[in-house]
Length: 174
Image (cartoon, rainbow, N blue to C red; front, top):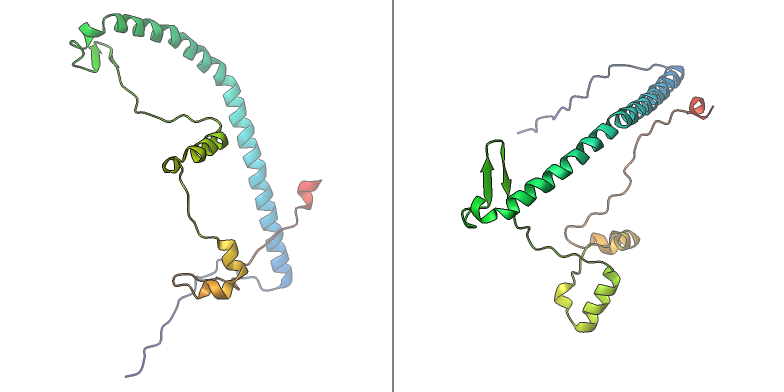
């Protein structure tokens, strides 16, 4: 029985350029559109900065107003912790407008001066506290592609071509 032909449908192009002048004009349009995107992104960033400048002082003022209230609530609750937590059986105290909670943070390692710490760990023989990360050396594989290709699961991708359009950005430089 004969194999059935496989047909691949190509995408329909919205534009069909017929001449080199049409292509040049299309590239110019891409450049114009990209410059407009840059212009709008800059305007957007400027507007965000203006809004931040407008609202940041108000937000900071409100944050500062909250701090003494938080400290006063904590002082009240700490002084009455046994009463509020039913002798320490609960971790949350409820009030009509909200709740307060006592939560123990999980243990965390805080390390400053990593190089010195690593050296000390090596000197003390505490290698269990040092993590060694193994990963492929892709640069070495690209330097010796024939050897790398012989390894199961490794493929060296070569000859992949990209199509790049670079509009002249003369107008931006002005």
